[in-house]
Image 1 (spheres, rainbow, N blue to C red):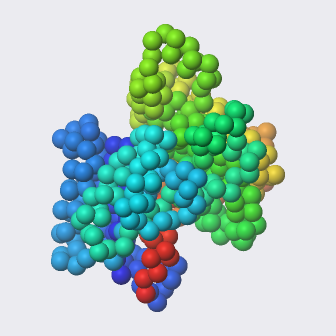
Image 2: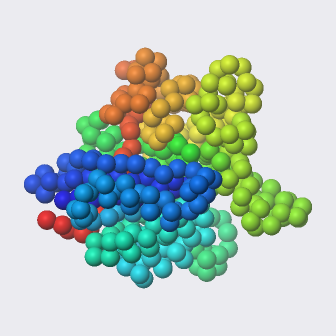
Image 3: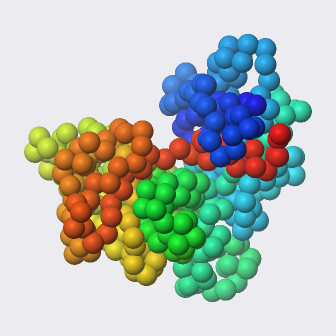
Length: 383
């Protein structure tokens, strides 16, 4: 049984092909192919439709005449409608498309790939798995903005949260490492990549998170600003900025790109170590805000059993992890420096806190593609 997962990013398209054995449910399957098309719109690959054609060609060689049994798609924003995975049809695609303005970097390319895949494999069941679904358990004090109620009721302006598929997957792995049932796991999970967020999990449910109405709120990210005083936006509007210019500023020209000139964490870390003041300041700003959010999420889950780091930066940047955990000393967190170095690039999770640390710190690689494949199988119900 073959399950294809398509993960459309703002400028990339990743795919993963897994073989599942029906006699071994929950085993995660065997990855038999993977790939990525990058710099979409910035190179000879003009858009995600062209990227899909490239992926289709690579898959044809791997499949050798076989057909996939199901396709799972990562969709960033599911709004209030989608509380879990959804079997795709034309009406579902239109509903997802209506949410494009809430995630302008991610939902539009996702919709392009949904349409392309349903045209390419019209008889293959396909499933949308939403980043927002895990956060539908947020209590109202966590999701409501202090804005007039009409804005929520008319436009759906509220906090939704993102990275839910990754957070759910990594949280369950963390609970296993701690020997705690998922429904009794309390923790803080930081997904740190080009996009970054922190989530408070209490009893296996999301109770607070840093991202909000869009994936823009919260932490310093690769090209996204994270939190900004809304008064800044009003000020810039009065200075002649329009909505498109503000959107580009906040989503594409801010974050590490604005602070350090680019968003390559490895290069920024190396530059800071070499004495570059801009790079050092960028890392300090990012770590400061992240530590503040982790502290808040520790309170939100009424005391974390563990802080879990994942995502490209969380998994691979030992210097940034060390910088962050030094700031978390007031929570009683103590870093094992040797374990921190060892954790980089590992396939399995590793504890990087010392035995006397009040809160465990775990580095756990995420596997969103596996989680999406498993969710797809569960919904489609293939034998």
